[in-house]
Length: 412
Image 1 (tube, rainbow, N blue to C red):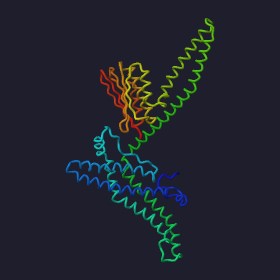
Image 2: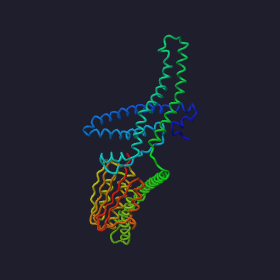
Image 3: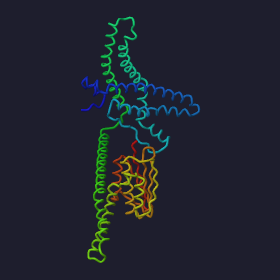
Image 4: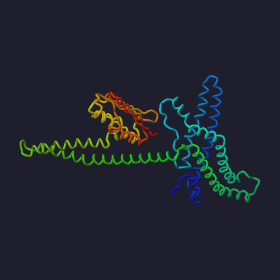
């Protein structure tokens, strides 16, 4: 079995362990822990002092808030550093902030238990852990180096004493790899216990179900792309060649011949089949989405819709593939519902990215009264969005208008 953390590395054979990267990764983790702890305690003390000094002019409250929220930054950095000694990624316990803005972010974070656990870890790191890291690192580096450098600074002893002393530094350095790795593994386990999200068993099962569903959606999307590629490069090209050959045959055929009409009919049927195949390919997975992104793909869908559709999409660039695919099919399904059920005269699609979330809205001026229970495709739409941890909100009062709002997290 592959070794996934520093504590498991201690069970390896000595030669295998000493030749691996685990001792060096553990040393780097402890050095970073010492530096992070010292920096964190200095920052907290500075923020508290700033809060005390500025409290007379109310601005000091910001210093106190920054002190509490400093743990969020330390926790995020610690989860990133932990990968040095533990390859099991520690998930971020914080939830997405529902509203944009600094005030909303601060208020939301102060209400989360994870924020206070991270503050407690910051205090523990600054008051105790960083000092222990420094002691272990200093002992692991200073003692072997002082022995190895003995002949250079011990001048009042003969070589028969200093040389064996220097040679003793080699096994001491080898032995030091074990306590360094052991403390790094124990420290990471302690940090994981404090910083890990608090979930119950049923939540763990729910997370696993969600991940399984996401894996199925990924596999399904890969298969859709394969089908689209096979149809585009295979059947479509053959239909194009067939249509061209029939067209040439029509040009070469004498006017009024008995075969002219059947060939013309076959040519028209081939062109219709090619048009239908292109529509099928676009429904399976549109090539424009892969090549040019969500904005161009939505504009193409809007251009082929049976009613006018206003498109207002402002994105900072290309989004992750799964986000683009989900958003695209949300627009397709929503506009299909508009055309079939709403009796609308006009529709609109807007999309933007705020923070780490894509917000997509599809609205129409139809009769309203959309009900997912009546099989309008909204249930399937919601399932597709839920597979990427997104949310769907529907507003459709009788008489209209109807608004479908979708929010999809955008991985950083």
